Length: 233
Image (cartoon, rainbow, N blue to C red; front, side, top):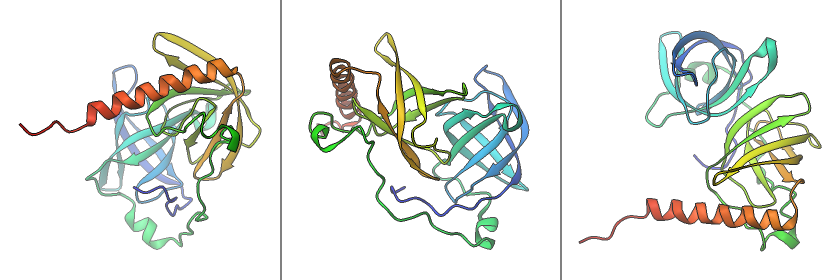
């Protein structure tokens, strides 16, 4: 998939969802698919804890497909757990008919903005890296979101989500550097509806930012080494 936002349709489809919860027990339940596209959707009403990276089954009518969980939000009593999901490669989207019938309106074709933390004077010092990095966010309403960031530097990150938080929202963020858990303050600097949000790490001094950047670069190098093809014998 490219970086351009997909055309999405706001809807409320009654679906069935099944898979393995975070407690290791299988589940099967009814839920709702909202804000759908041919590659993903936002699911609401999930009653079982999931983790980014999990693969779940989704059924609409007699059509079934497997989806990978990209992000989750504990949205409270009414909406329960919401999850952003992406179609697994090789699967056929179960709501193609609904997409064909709806008048889709593409999201604005603008370049996804960088986090405000990556201002011109800091771009060279803190290069943004395209690696998978797990972290957890909490806002002042105690809403929790666990996700794997794929665009991050020592000063901030961009999180792809169909439900970005409002610009200026203050956050508490937790992540791990090796065996140490890091808890910092952050703030949403950019909000792109249906696409994502840019976040600045405000609770880190310069040395801590440099430490995180070194760790991210190390992770990136290790990832490249593990996926590099072996030479022919």
